[in-house]
Image 1 (cartoon, rainbow, N blue to C red):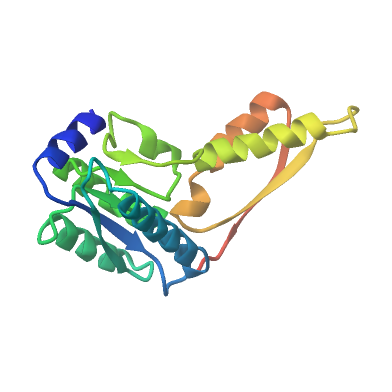
Image 2: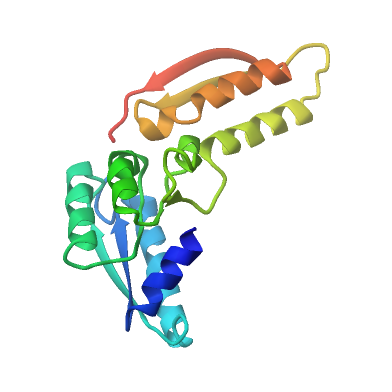
Amino acid sequence: MIVAIVALLLAQTEEIKVGGLFDLTGVTSDVGKSFAQGVRDGVAWTNANGGINGKKIHLFDTDYGYKIPEAVSSYKRMTGDDKVIMINGWGTGDTEALKTQVNADKVPYISASFSAHLTDPTKTPYNFFVAPSYSDQLRAWLSWVKDDWKDKSRNPKVAFYYGDNAYGKSPMEAGRQFCKEKGIDLVDEEILPGVF
């Protein structure tokens, strides 16, 4: 479905307009800057190598400083005035806040938030990401703990420490369930006060 939508939109334009919501100055800017530069470099490389079917990509990006209201405002500008056909998103909080609008607008949204529930096509058919979900990442780590555990006389023990935010909480239920299924003792959970 996404390929058909993008193909139709590409056929109607001289340039391909895409959006980028980046955190360059906010609480996740330590990694957000590199993400933004990667997207910008990808666009520059694609354009320098002929674009997509001969069409250049025009990236409309903004630093929303990891502030959800600013992300929502920037999204509205990008999908309204700028007329982008897709958006590269960033954080879990803003991706969660925008998911209903993204669905209503039918705008492909490639996010750097890897919350597993955002991959449910019945609820978020226009949200995509390019890495394992936070839940899959936690299960992979727990699998390593179980497989690498040397003292077979007892179960391995783990504790979960996570931020009091959507990003921190996202994989916890999957982690709890995986511990039960695989015989890993979850001995403690602590929610850390978060800054975002």
